Length: 318
Image (tube, rainbow, N blue to C red; front, side):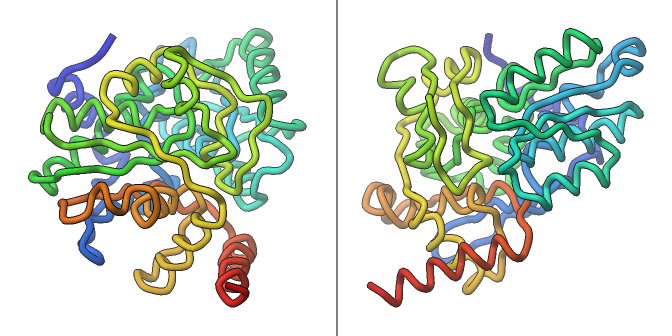
């Protein structure tokens, strides 16, 4: 199942003032789509709200649940507050502490588990035992439509784009953005970006079917989905022009550049698309009108400083 421009427009109308139209900022010859300024600190709020705004009374009474390294958990906690219900979120113990505390501040109950694989097992147990609605972090029409509303905004804000670079975790954002852009501007290239330690979508596209990872290893934990899922995979397979990989050091360098030159504090996932622009996609998009999606800012000062400091040290050693 795919969707139309009218479907995307209706989804954006449904979201209304619950989300903001994030700005586009011309910077160093490209356009930054500043989704880090979204409510909840990332694009995840769009899909989480589309998943929950239409829930019936019985579902609202039972509450919501999800699994996340943090940003989607924050989005679901925020959505629960908007629609007047409760949220129980399952988060790996290694998740950023500031994200965990943000979930609790928004009123969510947080369960900590060993890793992202255990989190998916536990969330299904909660769904079955408590009847809570599972708001998937990256799979299904609602999550893709959330990403598509971002694509719709971007296409209207910069109508003559030649290429857009999108970070990929599970693929919900990229599925939605790529679908919207190919509907609105078919000639626009859409490139997905994954960390080398979480290349689920690239492996899936090569194999021709969704693949899983035994281990996720990247500082960009918001992009650390352990597997691809059929719906998001199918849209990415249909609409993406390519997927490229970036390593953690290149992500740190991009974080440093966004901070030093653009005065933006972003989480590692939020810098992945810029890392690709300055690395594997540099020559392929040279001379083109390019947009880079800066997807989120859910990071605490200490962790951000550690990443930026590591980059600085690496540069000095080089």
